Length: 281
Image (cartoon, rainbow, N blue to C red; front, side):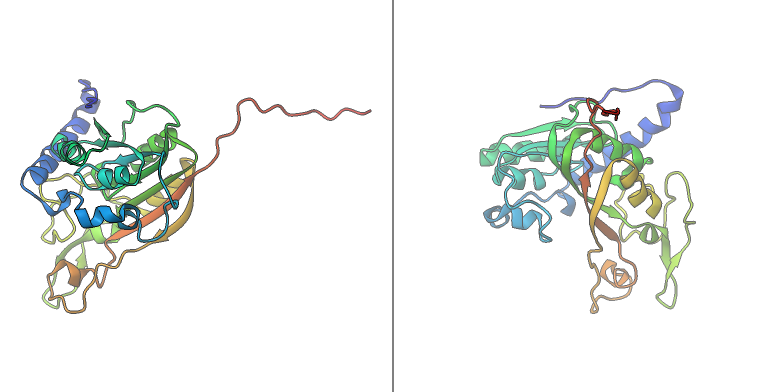
């Protein structure tokens, strides 16, 4: 099932819609041309779906019967694995081509997967407190306001719900080129605002997309301010000592490109709580 995000006509939203349109077109192209970012789950991966999804032990021992949102996670990989593990799966993605891969693979393997075409920072098609787990691969770099994404996730997660995510690290996105001594040059200011400019080094940038850099106070601080408790944080190693200069795994030895976070939705304050007044006996 597709639920289309509303298209706003006001001038203040015009730029927002333009970068969403560009990112949608870019990911449609990646999906339609067989990009490595659109690889569907294999038979081998499906033999132990939770192990494939979770090499860190962050997920519960079973997700059977749980409501899982794969946020900006289209492509026929994550959704199919969760469905194979017994979860009730919803996928939200901006790209209809990525969602078609989820629909195709779910049908081929006999799974039920709901798909919704929408931006990760507008989950208005989803009800409040309707998920036990939200799992988001690298994707927040495609929206300007990460706080809005976090607040939407906090709204749709149930109390004590799990949010697992991966993001691009700011320092990695500040790198613009490699010099003659094979040093990686930081050329974008840490407090840069707006879309990132084109750079000579595109090791960890997706072709054709509009990307944004989020500082640590936004990646972690906004998460906490949105109602989450951070339980774990990891930096996946993407380096290779044998990689030649210029290769993305060579760069990965010097700057960690990604950060993974495990967070828990804090319990909401009860609106029915009654404070008992002390009175003398």
